[in-house]
Image (cartoon, rainbow, N blue to C red):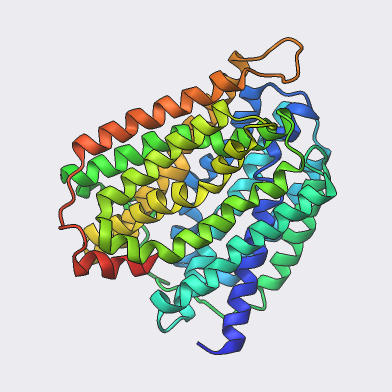
Length: 410
């Protein structure tokens, strides 16, 4: 891949995830502390991203594949998002904030698939070139986390103003990206194609069905981390939690690099079980940790993010790609995305808010009984782990060349 193209695509990933990171970690803290929304309302606002993840295939499948060049659609969506972010920064009541955030996430969530698609369309060897480009997205997330934490704008509408400015920049920058015209122009569009319904036939395989069901279930306790951790760390006295949470993305990079070696030794099932076990340990760390003598537990819970994310999500995506026949690979990835970032995380975002509201404390050093809050996802994660361990059977022997080859897709 030519250096100019690599720099263009790397910058695209950096800015796209920078935009996402401006608000995703801190929006719950902002709406519950600054706007005084209930935790349930905060969870539903956070869950708008999951609703958008379920809707976004319409944008990618209907418009981009058939009518509009990917880079132009990316630019249009980000510019619309920038305008919406201005109104979000001014919104103070729940109904307005929820509707505006839903509209914004509908414009943003397709950008994840769009940026991936643009990369794959211009790479001769995606297996080799994509990880080095995609890692700039994680770096962009880390940079904005440090910036938001350093500026101390977690409880300020300045985070949304920053997002709006960067979204506008990203929107304009998108029009300079390499031309990526529609690949299925003129092809008849069907609802089945758009939603990936053909991939449901794979559910006839027991282990594939167990993977999808487990993905939905584990994303319920997973949501507790994304929704509540920033507010929790600030609440128990950790200084500059937003910056320190970027240690999780740093560990994600490290574990992504060692995943191919782990695949050879462990195989799919053990990798996913380790990922699930890491969620249990993380929540126990948060339940028993504090900002004093047990602060190492808080750091441990953050740093476990690399194992939690890579060993479950990335391994699951590789498994799905490996199991699906060639003509269903795209639909199968759409199905697992719908199950995880869509359905599972939406239920989890709502449940997180309900649980937090149920453990409000009157007075005291902290506003919530965080021990009880974190024990809920710890228990849920453990139940899913047992279910997966008993029900899932890898169709290939662990450590086979096929698994090793599939791991390169990470």
